[in-house]
Picture 1: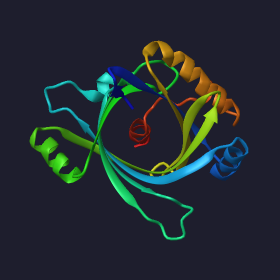
Picture 2 (picture 1 turned 120 degrees about the vertical axis):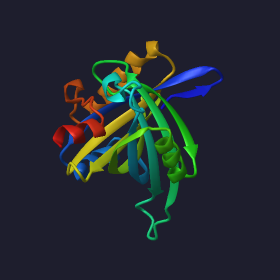
Picture 3 (picture 1 turned 90 degrees about the horizontal axis):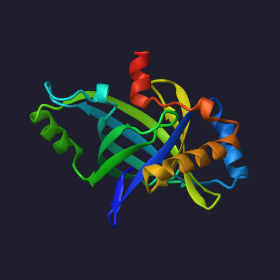
Picture 4 (picture 1 turned 60 degrees about the vertical axis):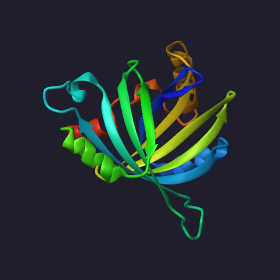
Length: 205
């Protein structure tokens, strides 16, 4: 996620790999000191610009409305909370990861925002649904977020790991740190998937 704090632009450095056995991975997370934080259900609706303007599919950009339902799987009675996000994603900034600049706004009323975009001619492309488990690791003086994702439409599990870089110059350092972290679980940069979930779904369809 791109954030601005005291005039400092932060870049989300992200690597994604496909996994086959989430149960074993959860056990490995525990051995490596991973802390389960929460579970999420995400519904991500993607948009393209109005006709005649630039095509976000060609420019490697994305515009998304996310409805995020958060809960803890460890609670006997699940207390769920819902948050909406409106996100712009710039093009990927390297050739081996999904790292990119993002601008994100939190809001309350997804349906009203969808209506505004529709009136302005923005085109709804597809809604991606995924189930997620968020874990947190302290690794080499960094806090790494790791997400075990399941996409019902693909019937496939993925692992996403994320760090924040304070500049493009710091991107390579943080990205290499993520690949070193993934090596603890048997993955390398050659397993990295750069396509978004939307791209993977559209490719299959």
